[in-house]
Image (cartoon, rainbow, N blue to C red; front, side, top):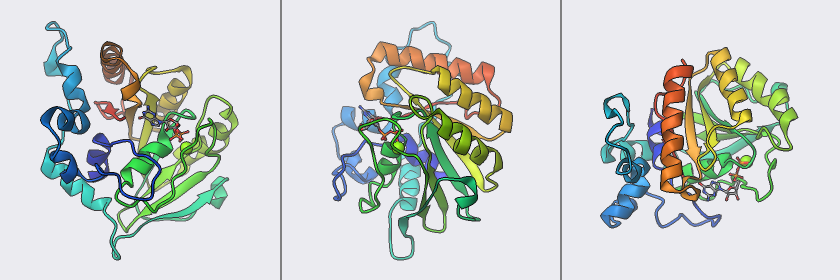
Length: 253
Ligand SMILES: Nc1nc2c(ncn2[C@@H]2O[C@H](COP(=O)(O)OP(=O)(O)O)[C@@H](O)[C@H]2O)c(=O)[nH]1
Ligand SMILES: [Mg+2]
């Protein structure tokens, strides 16, 4: 799916209403090679640090080519016929809009970068307001964003610090009951690796049998060595302990 491809190469953006200068894949391709590769394929700079002993044949890397990235970008490029808009919010399950188009949601601990990632995905539609907070626990609601007739993105309340009840009250029943939910992105802080509350979310996705992807955020905050060991640990964890998770974690900064 295209949102998966574009997600892979997200660039963190500032809160201006103008498109970021690197909002489009085409602009990124004009950068010097090192910078371009580190933005489009964040794992490529880490790969050089992999020990010779690591068996890379088992290490599946999801590295979409430029054509695939540009194809994906079309979904996030607004036009009169393909509008990208905030559509509604819900504080309870029975307040959620009845939608038939496919839905993808972003879950993770408070402050892990859910709203920032959605804002980055909407970087070619900077007028869409996705609130990013300085203080944890800001998103108390489920926020629905419509991407034309293609799909809906849902920004979820964070769990963990200061907001455990939101998770139980809203995230859990949403994951269990939402019929049009086709993919869940579970965000994990790339400078910390899997934490206690992340494990609760993983177990929930496994228990409900919903397909999900682990996304490592804030990789710019981690040193190369530390990040590499977190990526490798996560890779083994996915292989050995999960059955519904996409085999490779995505890296985002
Ligand atoms: N360094 C860095 N900071 C980030 C990144 N993503 C988000 N942040 C910051 O982390 C804080 C929380 O982000 P937010 O998107 O509101 O997290 P949410 O609670 O999961 O929605 C904000 O100050 C963001 O600017 C990232 O990839 N790198
Ligand atoms: Mg948020």
